[in-house]
Length: 250
Image 1 (cartoon, helix red, strand yellow):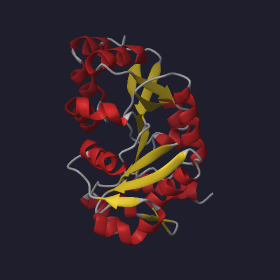
Image 2 (cartoon, one colour; image 1 turned 90 degrees about the vertical axis):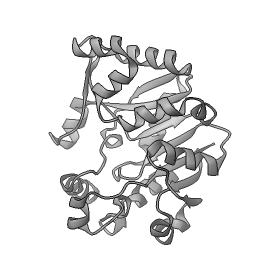
Image 3 (spheres, helix red, strand yellow; image 1 turned 135 degrees about the vertical axis):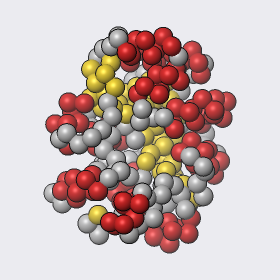
């Protein structure tokens, strides 16, 4: 069994606040449900997930979704600090799934497929990546960040499967990576000059990144190629809300 942490601490942009009237994106209503409710439902479809904790503004969230999760705990100053808050509450003995609250198209079967792929190779943490062509086939040319590697162009997903006992040891480095997770060049810069040169000259591979992370962190991380672009599709603009409404209406 494993536990799950939903990160719901992000405030809405002024554009979101003006158009949808919500201070917290996780409480955006899509077809009569809060966006975070779609994520909670997906997690509850996964038999191996035991406890679900939401990290975000307690007053706003608890009155709306408090009965459907184990607990709502206050957020930290950034996604990594919020993850630590969730881990501190759970005190888990096994790996934990950390997932964003703004991916309403996620389904239980997609999470189960990710877990299955993770189970085939031992590692300390796992991160899903999505091929650009797979994402664009599903969602079109909406503006997203992809990194061109030797195996193809990839974008990062909105979840992380981690061993909590190792997180505290490398918290500063992991915090940097999470803060810059949407910028392939910044990630390369954090990982070092060799990674930067390989990225610039289009010679960087998934394994290069995995090997460098292992050397820096002294822990093994694996990028898991998922066939589900919904894991990458997060809501960060009104355009994405329209796309989500279209798919959730089906």
